[in-house]
Image 1: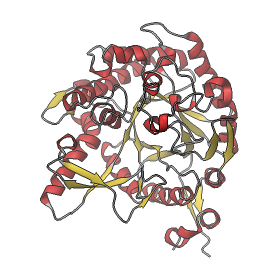
Image 2: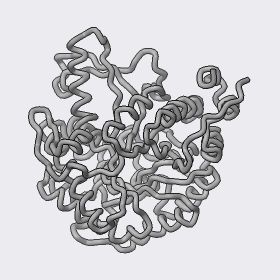
Image 3: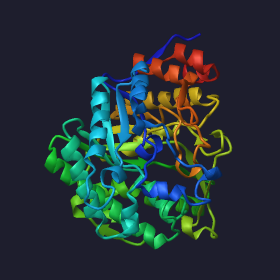
Length: 441
């Protein structure tokens, strides 16, 4: 058996990522809580309920699990709907609860990365038009200022918006997220306002906290033409990539937000980014289909050779992570893998998923791409949006009836990787022997 180690850079951040609505529970004033109460919106009629009961205090035991797993960083989000449950009313008790969370992380030597908006909004914000409202940018900046003013002494790494590109697609084109619209014009309007909101929040945060590091996290969907020899497949693949993946990075460089038909000037966007967050899960193939106008005439599907996750939700392509990092490096900024994981209740796939993706990540580091951390999705099974509790992404299994956590083998595997700051052949041989020869030839 080979005896080798892939060692990561000194001070590399190892952690997990969570989102407030998915773990806290009883987020009563949010658009998602209201959405869940409507029949047919969530798979199998599930609701978030207590979620992982973090708002009830169980974040402390989960933070201890992070320590036991040798994690030195955690990406979490604060909940706008709790902090501002009605317009311009600030719930100081909610802010204090988040303060206690950050203090608990600091006490455990876990570095926080705080997301200001992870898919979820106050219900009043949605009722006022959501991101279609011209006032939404100012409303988000006001919220960002309040959070940073209150919590800035405990955090200097801020993530303004999680996956704004995916949010626009899900909420305004497919209609799976609130407000459940299927309107391409609305989608471009919302995308533009989200982009402006990041820029506005970026400058506000730096005004309050000059040394802050501010970024965003994009859902990077790796797209390849189904038939590389087909001009039509190549064209629709390039178009989908430009609008879904490239609009935000190019806007940082050009000071323009690119929609389907025009570029909208946002001059303050130039340079309004300190680091790049990459959420990578899968790749898809794209085939020209004239019957798919809302998908820009491109039909997406899985590569037949890619392994599928438990419910076929993810088409697994580990080597794609290196390609995504190379693409992210175009901005010349530090990068973090802010999400990467797989739904797998039996832990049959996750160990090799981890090993294969971390090998690709190590290759990127060895090629001097400036990747500074990896946040696995996720620590404990949580409420997966429109899919409810039907998917299990956690290193720890959750019994929602009892709130009991049970470590999966991958939790122990990830702990050894974090502890050693390395992926070793011994760890792969123990937890994912089927890919040992592939990763350590």
